[in-house]
Length: 270
Image (cartoon, rainbow, N blue to C red; front, top):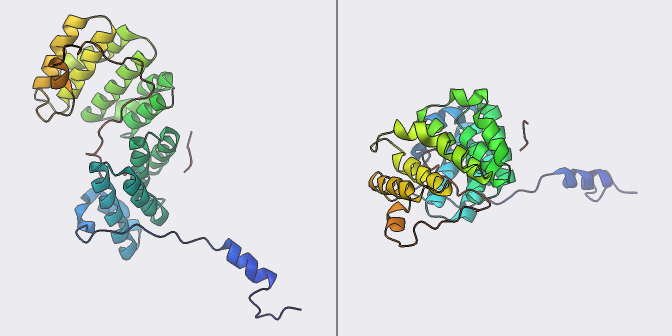
């Protein structure tokens, strides 16, 4: 008979089996500090203990740095660590979703974005959710989301992002004329100096090209290059390429939109 203090007794073994395995956290560089995250992130982390909030904030900063350096495995490790520490904080789940999005892990990204949306009650993730639906091969779902009531709660910047997604989804569906029309009013009301104008003009040029309007497409490609001094698109390169009118219109998944401006960000709620 096992003695009560015998660690080999069945109850002790069961306790050991129930004890979660501790996952080693990725190292944090000394220059990374908690005060590098936005104030809005600090406000969300107030529900945590002081030490935990500081640790989570530093891991979120590390995610941002890793994404900027295209070190997606490193970004994932830090995002997962932040989620283990603070899985009920919306910005943490949003960050993990963004990492999966950049890795083209569409189903995982969608799950995290939906969870973050449920936790925050905000509509700002709708463009990313819609684009992730495109990545999953469901462009019709992206169009449906854009037509829903939640889209009316978006600010101007997010409305532009959603319009870009919808235009791409229309092209996915072979609806080239609808892809043009979905951007036309926005393009005409957006000046070249407006934030995001280069990307908008670029998407419009591609929609026009898909609709067989090569000359008009090239004109908007020129406008995109002029409105994009930072080179966020390859408009200038395409203009200098004699084959610029030839693009891949049958790509299976969307290119990840640059969402670095969204600071660092399960189960589905749908």
